[in-house]
Amino acid sequence: MRKTLIRVLLLLFLVASLLTSCYNPFFDSILGRRRGRNREGAGEGMQSLAAVGVITDIAAVRDSPVTFTWIDPEGDFEYIEIWYGYSADDKTGTSLTPIWASKGTQTCTIPDPLPGEELYFHFITVDANGRRSAVVNYLVLPQVPVQVTNLTGKVNGGDSVTLSWTNPPATTFDHIEIAINPNPGGTNPRKVKKGEGEQSYTWAGLSSGTEYTFTVKTFDKDGNITVTEVTVTLEEDETPPLPVTNLAAVDGGFGSVELNWKNPADLDLQYVEITCEPSSGKARTVNAAPSADGTYTWHGLAGGLTYTFTLKAVDHSGNRSAEASASGTPLDLTPPAAVTNLTATLDGEIGAVLTWTNPADADLQYVEIDCEPFTLKQQTVNAAPSAAQTYSWPASLTDGTVIPLPSTPVIPPAIWARPRLSASIVLTPRAAK
Image 1 (spheres, rainbow, N blue to C red):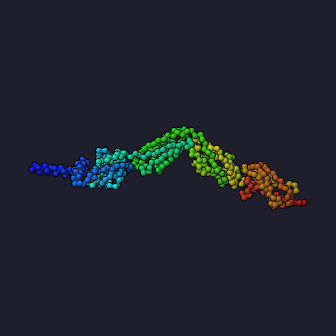
Image 2: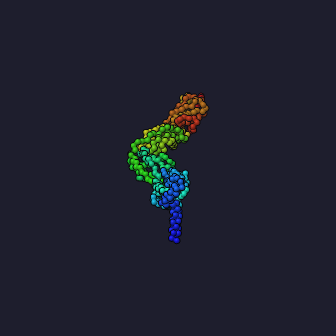
Image 3: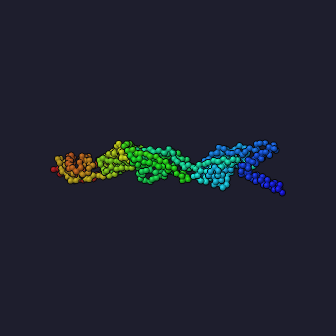
């Protein structure tokens, strides 16, 4: 009876050893040696007794999921069993079931359970007999948040700074925020979302002689943030912008002149200042963008009078460029008033003497005199505003004829199609005796 009991116990031990060998390298090695002895005795050779190899050259990329690559061991095996945990000794950790990769796959992508934690991954090679290799541990560090690189700040004139940097790869990058201290006003921080590679952003409206610190926060797609800073000092700006170019003045319609020009390329350009001579109101300012075309129409000018317009480019520090000037003459469509106090008296042998007072128009140039019935061609008399005038019509009248003598003031330039006002008087010469 005792022998039977011993035999049963030995049989149970052998069965337990066989089952445990699939999971425990210790029993597996015992069974392996036992199998080896049995196979040696049977002449099966030593090759089948070789230990199960382990994978090599493990590499991992942690970008939300974790992607592994490796090189399979030599020799025969069935699959790679993968577990993960928080330490090299923890073969189960947070993974309740392992992940299997068939022979020849040599890669595996696993969802990242805790992106901010260190994780140990454990790789075990399993052969067709259920034998398991030694455990290969591989530590995967937390994903490093993305961050811009090569951050620099360049001063443009005296009122703006251009930040330049290189964005991280678009696979993880989401956006950046730029904050400034001290804040000159406006939105702060400013959200900037750009593509891969070299980028830039210009912050304008700054004050010369001030030190500014720019803080750049980089956000990845998981909300992780990194911070990079650069400090820039804006020296006092005493450099004026270049003058405007291609300046031209053309008629802009009744009482107006239109100005056109090209702005200089200075990045700190703020506006263009325009003055007019003879003076026609205070200086005008036109907001200006670097290198852009500029235009302005000056209204309320006297028609027919030539004006000189002077333009200066002004930057944010108040520096003014050299002058650029152009002259223009607005079209005059307003006639002068008629002459007044017109009189006519006979003179000599059928001649006439005309007297009148000129109108007060500042742009008056001369007075035209016609005679009907026609005796001589039209006569012109230079005229000053508001002056008393006298003119002797040559002896060409016919005795006893009623003659109206119109007198018409004309303003420069003398374009006949323009409206003119006239005054007239009727003169009847004495009949011949």
